[in-house]
Image (tube, rainbow, N blue to C red):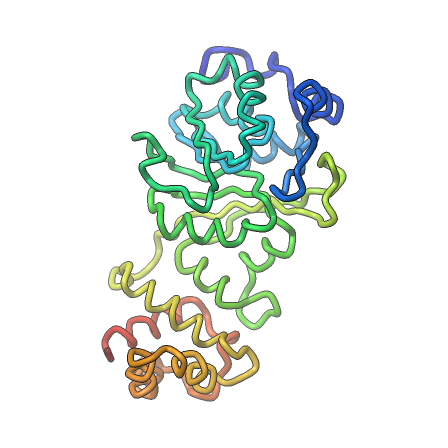
Length: 302
């Protein structure tokens, strides 16, 4: 049974090419390239997303880019509530129709997802992010949300394959960078699967991956928000000049940051020594845990 007492298997699916095209035609719409609209038309993928996300009847789910409501409909049959963020006003009437029988548990936020605020949740704190994200903002949005919304204990998102590889990259690999470190300080990957470009209408020019990230609970007791933020800053500095040593890359980064940067540079040898990091290593060889040590050393030194 669904959360509203209806059998899930009796529900019509929107995730077919014919159903999606019929809805678009009826409302006189076409996918907007500027909004990164590629509508999912494979119901098997929708169900795999729900399973990977582990959506439960007590969950309030945050979704970005509901489109015509394909994934939203499935989420609403499993979750207590869904908060969907959509900036395309032409899709509002579509969502009112496709989600009509479930709309009482939908909070529709009509704005740019990058401008989302806690007050937009209308008092309903989301426990997870589940979304087929626009490729152009996916990496930025995921890191932004996990930083600003600590209530999110997980994020199960469809992103461009290369973005998923950055999210799950290991130290020393080509995809490992400052973004990976900053995300890894907060979340850890715990499952993913590939999605073909042929599962969308229209097909995008790239392949996709659905990846699940869970909030880390294994950080040391001393690694509070200030330490994580300082570690993130050290990651930005270490990767400012990727092929340089960490000492030289930090000089480039902090050298352009005024008085505070000069103050950090003055104490850089002390920071590196306290974290047991040789000035001659490169940033891409260091683990997220080492960046935590650098963040703690930075706070102590400054």
